[in-house]
Image (cartoon, rainbow, N blue to C red):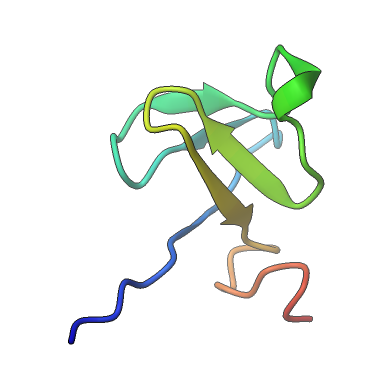
Length: 65
């Protein structure tokens, strides 16, 4: 059985936007509607997915450090 890998995102320079790895659209972080804000995670409205945010581009998330 195939195991799905959870994708992470890296914030663009300035830390205000990210590119969704599923739909390739640029999204704002934190989102305009703070109901969808969760610390350490980015949310894509188009895909309706939460993704962990990488720390400093090493591929490690905040929780893994």
